Image (tube, rainbow, N blue to C red; front, side):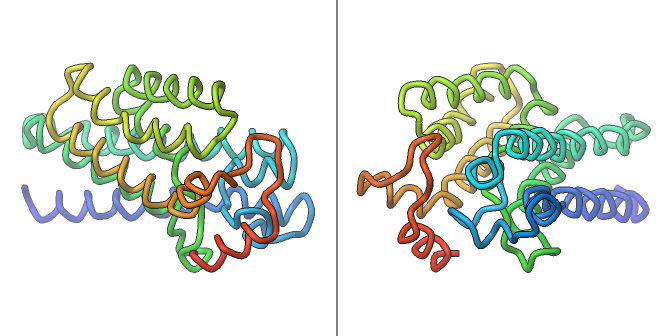
Length: 224
C-alpha cells in the first residue's frame, strides 16, 4: 500500500466519522421545539428518545437519516476503493470498509459536534450492515422486530439483535473480518446500553410508547 493510498483511506475514515457525527436528533430537537434532546428522556440523540419526546414523524426521520449515515459511509468506501482492485486484495478492501463502518458507528455515539455525547448507534449500525451485506442487515432487523413485537421494549430488541450480528455474518458465509466486525459492533452497541440493561434487570425499562421517568433520566445522564 502506497503512502498516497494510506492518506486517501485516512481521508475516507475522517469523512465517515464526521458523517456519523451528524447529530440528527439534536438538530431536529432544536429546530422543532428549541430543546436539547439530550436533556430529555434518556438523554440519547437517537430515534427512540426523539420519538418519545418529539413524536413519530421526528423519530422516523431520525431513524431513516441515521441508517443512511452508516450506509453512505460504506458506499463512500466502495467508491473510494473502486480503482484499487488490483492493488488491494479482497481482505484488505474488506478491512478498509470495516474501518469506515466502525468510524461511522463511533461517530454517531461520540459526535465531535456534541462533545462526544450522542446516541447508541443502533440505526447507524443497521445502515452499515445493510450496505455491507444486506441479508445480514435484514436478518438482524428481523431479530429486532420479533423481540420488539413480543416485549414492546426497544432496548431489549436492540441488545438481542446486536448479539446476533456475528452469527448472521457466519450464516450468510461472509469473510472472517466481517464476523469480527459483527462481534465488535455488537459489543459496542451492548456497551452503549449499560443503563438500559440495568433497568431491564430491575424491571423498570419503559416499553414502547411509555415515557422515561425523571429518576431514570437522572441515572442515565449520570452514566453518560
